[in-house]
Amino acid sequence: MDKYLAPSRYINFEDPRILSLARSLAKNCSNENDIVKKCFEYVRDEIKHSSDFKLNPITCKASDVLLHKTGYCYAKSHLLAALLRANDIPAGLCYQRLSVGDSGDAPYCLHGLNAVYLRDHGWYRIDARGNKNGVNAQFSLPREQLAFPIQSKNERDLPEIWAEPLDIIIKILEKYETYDQVLNNLPDIRLINSNL
Image 1 (cartoon, helix red, strand yellow):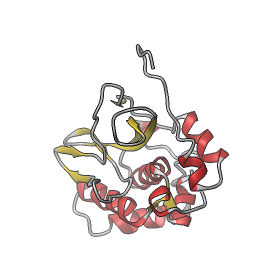
Image 2 (cartoon, one colour):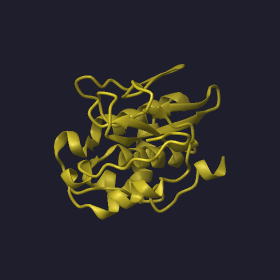
Image 3 (cartoon, helix red, strand yellow):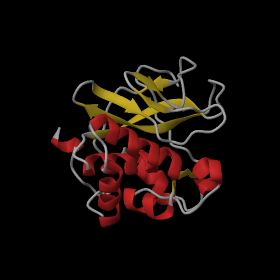
Image 4 (spheres, rainbow, N blue to C red):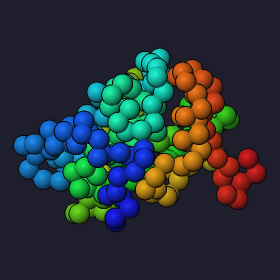
């Protein structure tokens, strides 16, 4: 579990602002689940999704997401992991491969979310990308309620739980400067045993 509790370049919870927010969110919480819910709802509701709100700059590090109060799903997952790890709760990064147009058809892109390890439940996925019309992600144990369902054979819930962001995600977030540049170059991967 150590790697899911460690600070890193992108999940940089040693930043004083992140530590302060993490402590503030955990204050008055009676248990681990309450802390997770408060951190999740903060990132979901207080950090604006870059594309939904047409916001710049493009953020990647957790501290930059908090500073600018905006990020793509990937960056928001970095901040959520940082807040959870700062509260000594193991957190990782997960990805889905989804249709860009919500039709189930090509083109496809990766979508970033989190998994948190809960002592009484095990690994549980949460998606703080931000709710909007047609998107209603919640922390609703024991059932997962993610932002997007899998709708076609070429979409996937990727099973891995990563301690660090995928390189392809970092390259996109660090290469482009505006939300529309990222939107036009969303990262994707080829599926194993797929002819895509």
